[in-house]
Length: 199
Image (cartoon, rainbow, N blue to C red; front, side, top):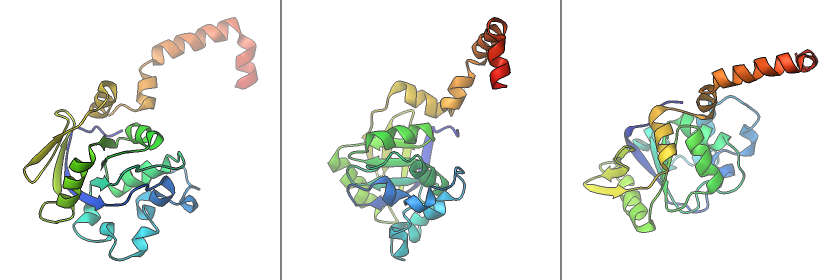
């Protein structure tokens, strides 16, 4: 997983509430287990409109998404954050982010930020203007800054550390490789028939 420390990027406004994971990435794109290429299908229905924000410059290069309340609700599909990440979005800011989607973001190197509604409204307004759409998300300082405005956000200490160091669940598990190897060796000596049955 790519580490996340400071993101200096264009923010795209998505002033819609209750955007579910099917709207983020529709069901017909779930047949793959590969993450690459899903960015083309991100918000596929909305992107049929040439005026949709992610179809227009500079937001077609967005690295931050400022969204409405209850973003990422609906099914638990992990393909939704995969599509955001493949598009280039590494941070989602909203007044409310659905819990499963919120957790899946951290697992995939995306920083989800929950901020009060009035602060999100300010960021949404700034993101809507190309001149003020550039924002900086500093995970170490836990701040979002744009056009002279700065907002503090909260984040779990372990999740913050994992993002800063690019540690996902696989990397976390691999830390215990010596213990796993010892267990496997012990299990093989005590129950050799199991290795035969499953090898």
